[in-house]
Amino acid sequence: MDRSSAASISRLASSVASAILLGIWINVFTDRREGAGYLDALTDLGYGNLLLVASILVLVVHELLLRRLQKLEFDDLENGFELLRHRERQMLHEALDLTCSLIAKTLAVPSNARYFAAVQDESGDVFLEQDRDLAILNIPMPREYGFTRVDVTTPQIVSARAYRERLPLYEKLPANHSEWYSEDVGRMIEPTQRWVLACPVLSLDPVTNRHDGGRPPHGVIVFYGTQLTPGAGARARIAESLRYSQKFADYMCNTLNTLELTRSMEGRRVPG
Image 1: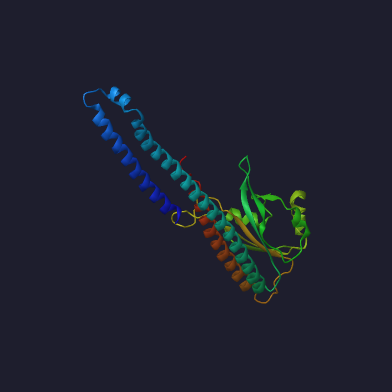
Image 2: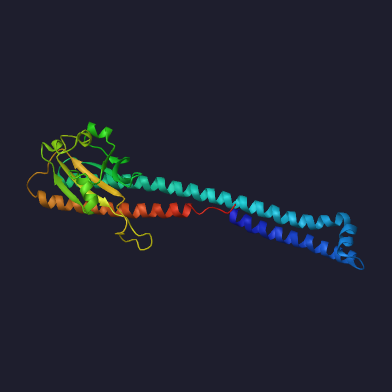
């Protein structure tokens, strides 16, 4: 028997029991009240008043039991949401791995992939922060280990520009690109990196499921590597890879929108 059925049976049983006890007490009280006042009748009834107390206790116990069942159901719902979020993260990682493989095959070069989440600090500045779990690392890049975050206004960072412009971008990096950056940023970027493909993960309206221009992107998905695509057909290969990144970003948009809805549902607490 599930908890909903148990709650329904409990509600019915307590209502019937309370009604019976209250009915008996009313009958006895009515008989005793003939020719006497209410207070005298109550006093004369003595232990018979326990019927009234018992009917009230039945309702109170039922209410406490019902709240307990609701709390257990809510805990089950929370656990279900947590499992859903975990599964969604797993599916995102698998989809990112597949997309990274497709882009590497299309560009004919090895590729890494990372998601950078947009976070806001106390002063309102927005940064792109590395998601260490949502990453595919096929090419060793030691400097990334110490990566913290970069301001979205940093002009030389392709992922920051993709975030600001809300557009998928591909850019080749010259051999001396490490000279572009400030010391703090430069020590987090591998000098051997030669290309970057970045696509913003836009926010969706929770009702219409359309891109919400009034909200900033969730972050940026970035593919990158140390070898440039061979010259023959490179432009077409890059265009196809940009489409792959957009498809993954759209999938991630919908996934994050679903997770956002589950969090809003999870916030509806059980009374008491």
